[in-house]
Image 1 (cartoon, rainbow, N blue to C red):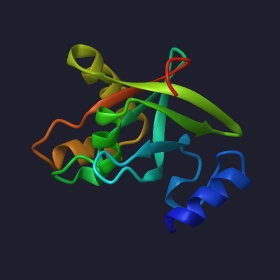
Image 2 (image 1 turned 90 degrees about the vertical axis):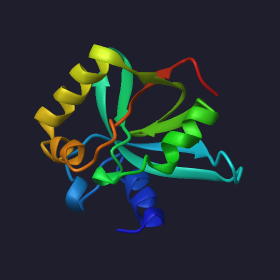
Image 3 (image 1 turned 180 degrees about the horizontal axis):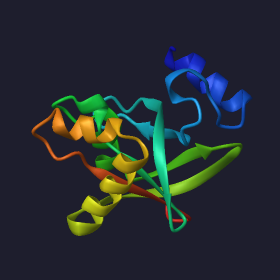
Length: 135
């Protein structure tokens, strides 16, 4: 599924998509290229946590962080689309035991995330998207 098609499918179905992400909690993450300055949108799985939307920079287990992670580090204030809502958020990286606990929760719900971490030597970043603090 191409990105433009997934964005359209997401919006037309209040955040629900088919294919390999059917039933998974997804959001559309808006971010601006740290170098290019271009506006971009990435569909990302999330874990709801105490009013936050927690995302995982797994990049499918690749040895590099996804572009959206670098972009959020450079410009943490952004917006997300969740269901039919659009929210201003601030991206905050989670570290230490909270990182480990959140990643373990996600891996228990979606075992592919455990495989992603096993497949790379990097520690996969965990980022909380906190509503009311961003753009």
